[in-house]
Amino acid sequence: MLEIKNVWKTFNAGTVNEKVALRDVSLTLKDGDFVTVIGGNGAGKSTLMNTVAGVYPVDRGTIIIDGVDVTRLPEHKRAPYIGRVFQDPMMGTAATMQIEENLALAARRGQGRGLKPGITKVERELYRTLLASLGLGLEDRMTSKVGLLSGGQRQALTLLMATLKKPKLLLLDEHTAALDPKTAAKVLETTEDIVQRDKLTTLMITHNMRDAIAHGNRLIMMYEGRIAIDVSGEEKKSLTVEGLLEMFSKVSGSDEADDKLLLS
Amino acid sequence: MDFLTAFFNSLPGAVGQGLIWGIMAIGVYITYRILDIADLTVDGSLVTGGAVAALGISLGWNPWLAMLAAVLAGMLAGLVTGIFHTACGIPAILAGILTQLALYSINLRIMAIGDAAKTKATLAVSVDKYDLLVSARYIRDIALNNPLLLMTVFSAAVIALLYWFFGTEMGASLRATGSNPNMARAQGINTDRNKVIGLVVSNGMVAMAGGLLAQYQGSATIDMGRGAIVIGLAAVIIGEVLLGKVFQNFALKLLSAVIGAIIYYVVITLVLRLGLESTDLKLLTALVVALFLTVPYWKGKYFRSQVKASAIGAGAHGKAEIGGDEDA
Image 1 (spheres, each protein chain N blue to C red):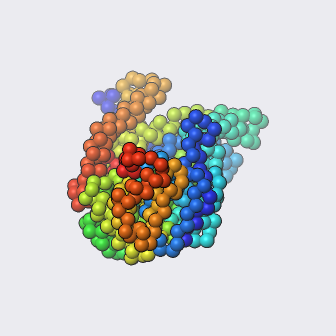
Image 2: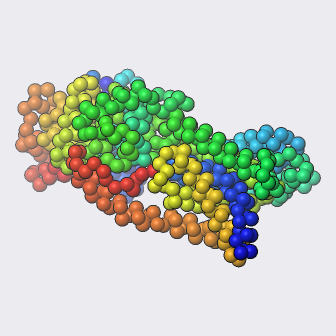
Image 3: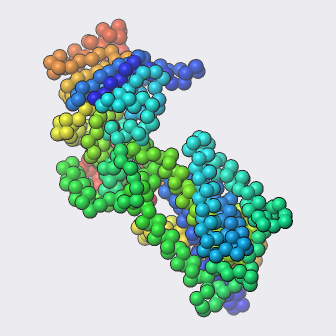
């Protein structure tokens, strides 16, 4: 479903701030894979996701989604394939627009937008049902501006928008990091439900090792722009936080002190 | 008593000016409020609209045809700014300034078409000689040719058309582009293209106002657009400050820009009666806009810190209503 082949990305090339964010990264996701991604700050997790989404171009390498080479496509032309939820709850929704208008925009992801009505009666009924399934009471506030919602409500809405039109690939960039623990758990639970229900191919960055272990069928850890650890199948199922930390110190050749990086 | 009589006598003129500038303010609303771009093209495209309409009429065209040409010319100006901004990567403000500057030369040329002179700073279209849509001469007449009538119809038609457009799929994607470009792109919206469309529509409106203004005052002049952006902003902001709480519907928001423009001209008329020189008005307008922009900013600063704290802290079931600093 997703093939990342030998991708390189350097920021501020040729300056003192030069930072190689991705070093020859290759990663293939099979249809229905749910991959969790962990790694310290600056390990390249978000860069990897942003290169897939097309936020910025890669220096070298190829990105293929569902057999289509999207390496040279701009962000909005990759959108038909990709559903995204961002770390910042403000980023995934239009604050000055209504809840139902946001959903209607998402329902048209990857389609031409002409002079037909921006939202129809039939859609409204569908959105009401979908919003009710979130259990946040948003179905009664469909014409409220999204800016009035809490961070958790906005993330849940963004998640709904990202999956409203079934994406080939779902990208979750630390989408629970800005939420309080209780809300984060709720949003993560909703995520799991939707991913299982629609059998979505998913790439989820998380800062929480426990979450990374508990969710998905494969776990990768990034370190200095490379995929340092790649665990799947039975090995992934039996993984523990301690085991993961041990694997990391082997890879990085350092002791406990560096482990803090992982948890940051 | 004399003062009041004179003031009331000049009220119809103020309302007339306000209605024309209201259409211009709607154009500014599209860029400034919907797309979040301060588009300085309008100082030039207003004149272009006036020049083209005056030229068409002086060449004997039907005034409606002349207006259509004026709107198209304004749209072209918006297209140029849009291309400067998106395809050439020039910051929006600078892109607008560049087009505005270029239009100064072009407008002088437009007004001289068919004339012996190569450039012309004024092109008169007297209501005695030509069949005009609107003229200030009939502003106090109780008759069908009173310009207030047609201009009210114009404003209503523009508001209705834009209300429909911004409710369509394309219109909604334009609003999303201005509200959150990151989100818009993630939903497959071509934000660059949308900015260009918005600038084109906006400058079409502004040129329409320019075309009406040239007829209303009987001439197009090269400096009729000086400071137009600030007057447009003043109208938008006055409308929002006075009516923002009551007018939530999109059509009413556009209407509040028109009402803001009328109030602006009524106030201007009043201060002129109080003895200010007309050349002092630019200073006054600038100060008013600066003041009205400052107040919401300071208020926003105070509210925003509260919203951040509670928006992140609140549970999904928690505080249902948080802050209102984002309401459009």
